[in-house]
Amino acid sequence: MAGMREGVEMEPASDSNLSVPLRRIERPLQLGLFRAAEEEKVNVDTKETIPPFWKEVTEREWNDWRWQLRHRITTLDQLKEIIQLTPEEIEGIKHSKGRLALAVTPYFVSLMDPVNPNCPVRRQAIPRVEELHLAKSDMIDPCGEDKDSPVPGLVHRYPDRVLLLITDQCAVYCRYCTRRRLVGSTERSITEGNFEEVLKYLKKNRKVRDVLLSGGDPLLLENERLEE
Image (cartoon, rainbow, N blue to C red; front, side, top):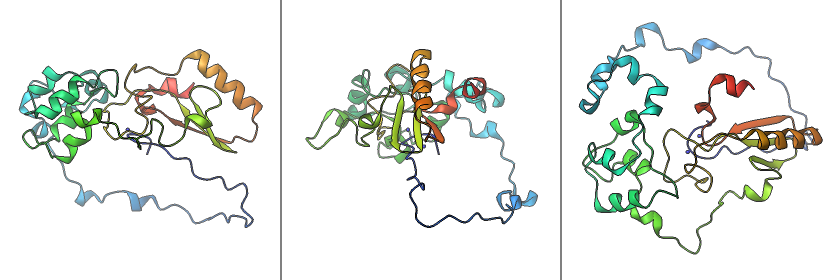
């Protein structure tokens, strides 16, 4: 589902109750440590990495995240053209609708081994029939977020910070997602009505100083929408 992409963004524990004051580190950040030296940079021709299935796609399109999102593989027929699916995968895809749907970007598919069903990247995103087998120990909400949700879309677990789930959409749906009860079914952002409820709650709880954006993947929203 992390970073703030696939998986869960766990809020760090509050430091408001620490008995020992935290010291501020005044040492300047050395940006050079995070930059690759010019001589170490490797120029890769992106066109050479585009799979033959998308041979008509331009390099500009392939590197455009919006293009990748628009051309996600979301059906069994689409995926069968690219990957040699096993019976377990076929059954898993057929039953994924209404649960955690199939959605994979062309780039992510290009990383998969098309003939090896045990490919880790492939196992991460392609549904399997085993997902239908529920054990007694399985939990719908393994992180216990619902019990800490005072209003829809908001998780308030620590006194001074909250988690705001602003979308239920991801570019790729990981099969191990801990929020599968929430993501992948409608693919929509938080409604204005829900957002107003969140604002009212935050105005009443002045101790909250951090609002962490999550989902789904909040970075799928346009910058203008995030700035609102």
